[in-house]
Amino acid sequence: MVKIPPSNPDIIFSRIGKLGKILLNRPKALNALNLGMVEAMQQKLDEWEVDPGIRAVLVEGAGGRAFCAGGDIRRLAESATTKDPSYCKEFFSAEFNLNRKIFRFAKPYVAILDGITMGGGVGLSVHAPFRVATESTLFAMPETGIGYFPDVGASYFLPRCPLEIGMYLGLTGNRLDGQDSVECGIATHYVKSEQILQLVDNLEQITQEKDVSFEISKILRKFSSKVSSKFVSVTGKKIQECFSKNSMDNIFEALEQVGTEWSQKTISQLNKKSPLSLKVTFRQLREGQSLDFESCMVMELRLALRFMEERDFYEGVRAVIIEKDNKPNWKPKTIEEVLDKDIEKFFLPLIEGDLSFD
Image 1 (cartoon, rainbow, N blue to C red):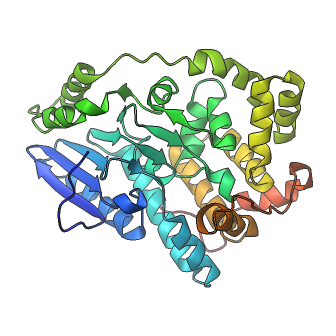
Image 2: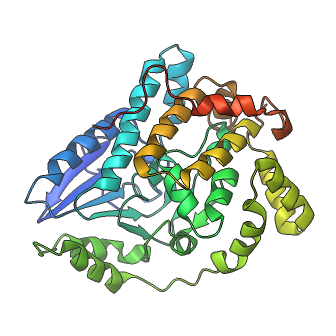
């Protein structure tokens, strides 16, 4: 567990030797991101990228329960319902620019995914070259369950998971543990939680001036444990059979035809999600297969702001986050009722201008 400094700001920056350290420090909120954290992290990464005294960056979450459970969804919902849509665009634009900064960051970046890693937390980690999972890691992109879609670069990384596992994870919101995360390419290394402090201590002592990535790789190999997951080899084949189809409707048909306990459970899971979210997400992930990272982020800002105009998002937030009755009343109620024209509008350029990169 990372010790929390007494001042307890939301995000803490420090440097030890040649290592720049970032601590997400909202443990009571599972280190959920707010706009101030996003802006501060962007500014610090901009500084460290050109600072010759910083050779690598490490990001962790405080409190022991979560790396980062996502963005502050409640705040986004409140801002839009109080007729303050400017906050939504400001937040998403800043967050997606930060995701790009991490994706294009010129120095080695290590994320320790010890605990819950969802939504916005995935965006702070999955685009980095070094992503360390533990036995406490719980990865998920659960957005279709709140009438939203997998963002923070999911358009790019989910379609690049093996087989059709990315489509499966994006639609169902199902969770992966640490070993499964490594096998699916979400994480790059698996280290037991009891060794994280020693791992970090070794990273703080990096000395290389040139080949820092090689030195970090050696340190991570030293502490990594062998992964025994069979998620891809066993469940992956089932997923490939059903989730490789060319429409959301055909995925349901394929699951029905398989008729196994797994397929019936998957149908039940999908039936609890927003039909609108499912269809938008399906198209988003199919399009993301052939797009570069920046194009994916432009598309995602369009989707994010359009979802802020949809009742399903607020209904999902109400049911899952605010009232917690877990009984959202989706409209439309079925995927058959979601028309092509309803989906097309999400992908059109924004009248006020698409995402621009700093």
